[in-house]
Length: 84
Image 1 (cartoon, rainbow, N blue to C red):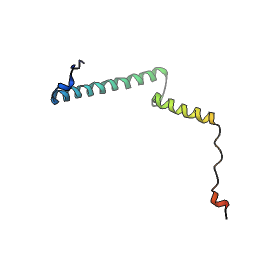
Image 2 (spheres, one colour):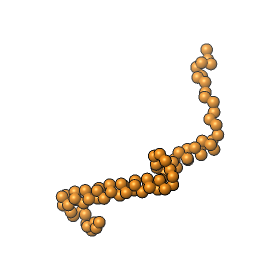
Image 3 (cartoon, rainbow, N blue to C red):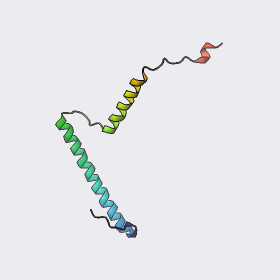
Image 4 (cartoon, one colour):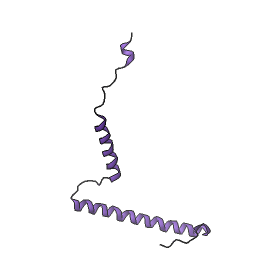
């Protein structure tokens, strides 16, 4: 798609048309992307829902941080219970 060099000078009606065209193009690209992800998963032999890689990286990062930190300290007892 060719974008006019100066979109600031376009009238509102033409801006709307351009916006609608870009939104439709974006939706089509997202649909194609989802199809390709499903095909890749199928070719790799994966079953079940496809996990977004950024979500997986975040979970892996958290697991590594917990592993480096070691076990959690025991829960602290309520201080008020020991006084009195």
